[in-house]
Amino acid sequence: MRKVAPELSDEDIDRIISMAWEDRTPFDAIEDQFGLKEQQVIELMRRQLKRSSWKRWRKRVQGRATKHRALAPPGTDRFKSAMQRVITGNRISKR
Image (cartoon, rainbow, N blue to C red):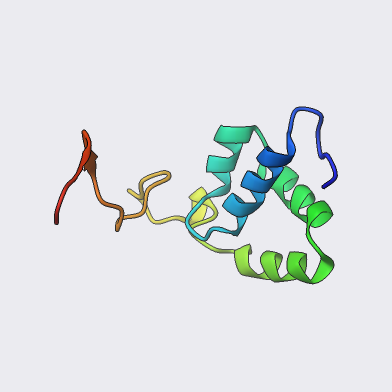
């Protein structure tokens, strides 16, 4: 894998790519964790993915409400799905 920036390791790049592919991970989460803005993530994906994979990814994320905080419904938690269970201590709470 090619380096995008000197401060990003191959493991960081792999994690960013997997976060970018996840439907429920907004670009804001990637920015908070790695300091890359949406445009930088797009450039990273363009450089790291095969052309057909990059085109498929771009088509998939364009306009997706879960990837863009501004498009998300009001009151949506930042990085948590409504289906995610609440974890208290070492126990998983039941619904």
